[in-house]
Amino acid sequence: QVQLVESGGGLVQAGGSLRLSCAASERFAMGWFRQAPGKGREFVAGISWSGDTKAIANSVQGRFTISRDNAKNTAYLQMNSLKPWDTAVYYCARNKDGDFWDDLGAYDYWGQGTQVTVSS
Image 1 (cartoon, rainbow, N blue to C red):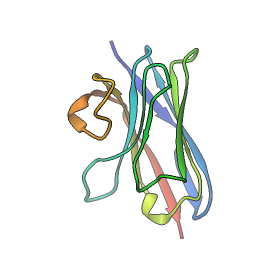
Image 2 (image 1 turned 135 degrees about the vertical axis):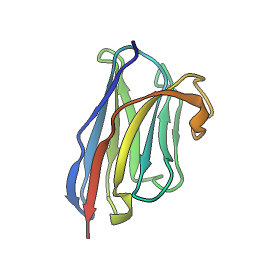
Image 3 (image 1 turned 30 degrees about the vertical axis):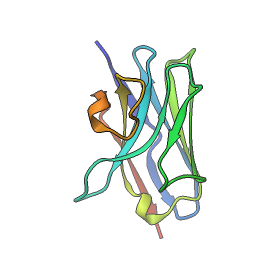
């Protein structure tokens, strides 16, 4: 059974950094999304099975980076220069298509989410 477990969320001051981890039960293309209170789920970043292809949302370009450790079946989201509007629950998910990174329909398995709160 496919499983994804996020970790690394927490409370941080604006300008600070956090690194989120997503441990998966097997190796596959993965994506990160976030959902703020009262808003829809927003694409943040995606990474291919090999790690050679990456996608980053314009809203976090230059501040967030995605990477993976295939030996651990784990993907990471390094978040720097955090802003209060980055506050959200962050989810990782399996991208079944290995493409269409910002399309929710490309994702079929989701983690439980990890809360990121950025104080001003």
